[in-house]
Length: 190
Picture 1 (cartoon, helix red, strand yellow):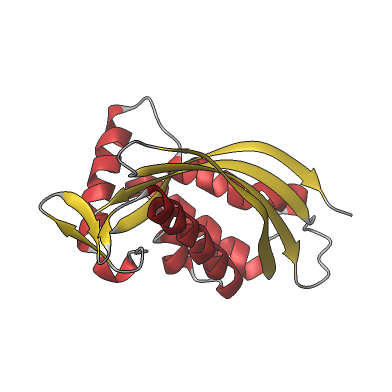
Picture 2 (picture 1 turned 60 degrees about the vertical axis):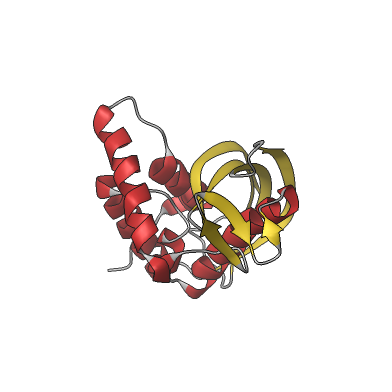
């Protein structure tokens, strides 16, 4: 039996990010986020790294000096590129390596990704990526992302769409991760 998302899939990936990265009022989710940060520190193979970065005495350094605004933006955008690659290659683990999530949220996100990948073959491209802000220490980047998602094959259960998201990424221990996603708008494409 083929799982069908019925016309809800255009916002599926945005929804996944909202679920996977959404803040919660429950203390257990705060603990889960802290646990996720610790887990990510130890999963070297799953990290999305900015080229040439290393941590020296607790400050962020690269082979050519300290972390800068330009390097921060480049690193954050590299995470988005990795996420697109994961969607197009239907690689659940690679997709999950771009998110700061743990516990039940991570399990739910993985299951939804698997179902989506079974039902759809997608192409994702960025129409635009604007930098909303970069923190003073260059460890947090907020991007406005306009993303186009299309089905590679004719699929009556999928509507090609243009989605605008606000994505927050954090840099810790050589790794950039998406920590939150806000869905701004969605438009069906003809």
